[in-house]
Image (cartoon, rainbow, N blue to C red; front, side, top):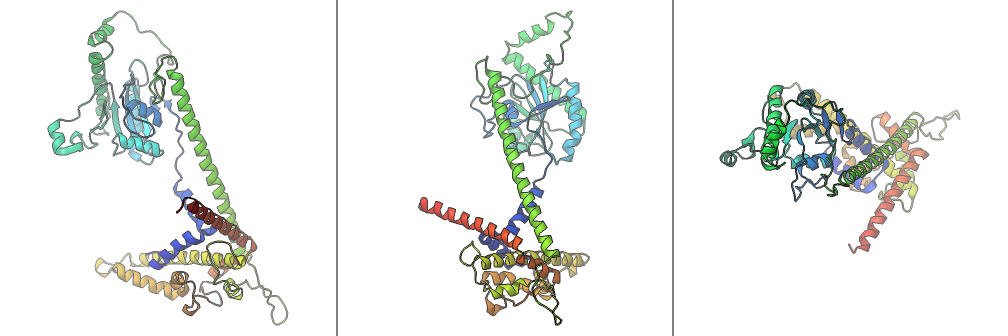
Amino acid sequence: LTLPPTSVKATTLLESNMKTILGTLVFLALSSLSSCQTYETKITRRERNLDHWDAETLAAYLGLDPDTAKPLEEDKYVGIDAGIMFYAQWCNNCHKFAAVWDTIGQLVHAGTTESNVILALFNCELDKQHTRLCDAAGVTHYPTLMFVGAGPYHDTDPITSAVLGSKAAGPYGASTLPRTVKFQGNLNVGDSVLDWVKAMRGLSTWYKWNHMEGGWLKGIRSLIKNPFDKKSDKSKGENSLPVGIPPGHGHNSNRASGTAGSSSSNSGLEKQLKSTEEELDVVKKQLDETKMTSTHAGYLIDSFLFPVTSNDTGTEGSSLNIPVDVFSKLNEIDAWDAPVDGISGNSDAIVLKSCVIDLTLDYCTRFSTKATTDYLDGIASLPNDEYPSFTEMETQLRAIIEGVEPYCSKFSSCYENGFLESEGCRPATCPLNNEAACRYVTACASETIQGEYKEALKKASDSLDYEDTKAAAVGV
């Protein structure tokens, strides 16, 4: 309802054919605003009782390729159990539960060799790589808790699975990866989560005793080896589990024991360095775009406050200081027939026409948006039986726009038809009833603004020439 359908089409044509600077800058500014998010480092670290994981670490524990999120040919247990909380920054419940998760980590001595378990956090929406891995892990809710152990977990039975599918295991769905299981209980009951972590760790230990580490007898002997021996007082560093990928278990790690840790560490550092460089490039680009947007906005404000004036004089010979009417200028230099797809021929006419069309469209878009908002506010209190249909609303909005700014109501059709003089598309003077709007469009008379448009159109023209040359080279 913001614009008539024809105006939307005209906007699309302007963006694809003109590539003028104002439309591009507005789009970039909005994109930068919508992409603002809380900064979070991708470097794996341990804070208090929880580990913050990167993509490579999660992939190593789950047996996935960190780049494609596909299962590795050989699923290999890394030797350490892990409970993982999958979350998103915008999830309030995740932030609330994080404190409970940290307390559970303290109670089970997470991150120590004594417990041999790590409680981790993983942001599923940090980037596309993180999202792919969460999809592969079957994460559908935030927060989701998953335990990764040494052996398989059976969270349902074949008959129930056949009847209920993935939901047979519970509201979070069955785990699709080997050696993993999801918590299906109430996250508001911290004791149940704690009991679940202990139970899953116990099942993992039992599996290792029976199938790994020399069998169950070795595990029993390790418990009764010397009941009178006091536990040694090891420092925190000596008693801590590795942060990040355990040595020798990275996707591209060297299987030789002497170089496994070094290779995995170097690979991780290289990826972190590459990721940081990419982030710096994005920030630099956004900074450049912001500077350009700010500069252009400043030029427009200056042109509005101090418009280019004509040399007309009054009856007594004094200067009238009347702002230049750019619509009159368009007729004076025969600019209405100038193309708007690049710089060629009469460049002054092309630049002026492009600028006038762009700023007029910008004003008409803003006006129609405000008119629509005011209209919807006015009918919001109507009872249901008096509320207009969508067809009636469109008709009424068209009438409002045509009554206040008739040129805006036909601007899109004028553009599509090449601004035919017979249809009233080439006004002799500014056709906008809003005096401030006419003064806004007058900015196109500024040499500074024209210089910006000329540069933008030149880049657009060069880009089109490059694409045409490229297409010809490949025989398209």
